[in-house]
Image (cartoon, rainbow, N blue to C red; front, side, top):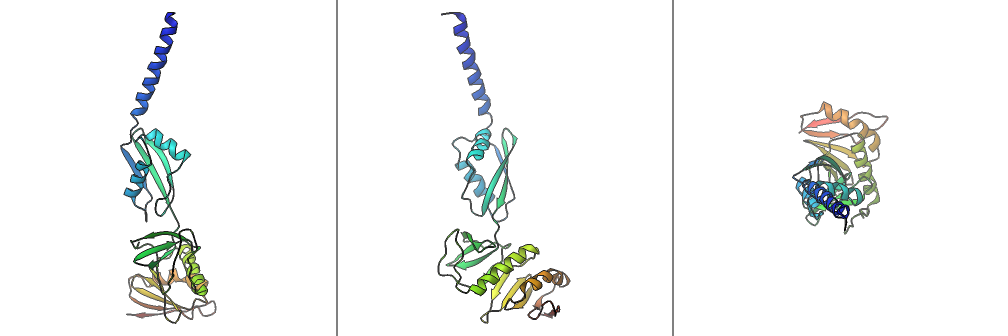
Length: 235
């Protein structure tokens, strides 16, 4: 056997072992999580690591290009950026949550189309809480089965307008008479039966700026395109 035939496999083996050793130094030490509001940084970090057979930054980056991590509450998708051989940065893109209702000691969260996104024992402050409606059942990925069609339509309209005009609304309530009351800080906003929601919500932000720091009831039941007036009663 020639010396050349002996040397070549040795060199090849040396290169392979060297490459494997180099790759092994890319062990994950830090995962930076960015963009969490409703989702949990710890849960995301744990889910990412549990989804790996080896805690290696190269394998993590490659795997999530092929098969992204899924089924994390409130998370639509994750994107991964390689920072250095021991650090990965993860950007979290959360689902667009519009509101929630209470169901059997849990909170059911839905999007602007009324589609159920998640359920949780926790009530998140940044999501409007809706009172005055009930459901007998629900399914993830399906529309909330609210029997009162008008109320359901009003909920979707309100949550879409809250997002459109970037309003800070903590609660939406339907009274026994079917009238709508919004809650912002210490202010209750009476909107009537919802016949003029687009014009009311379009102007609500400017009105609330003038009432900042106050506590009371804002009457907008008669507020429409022809009667653009509202009254406020200090509590």
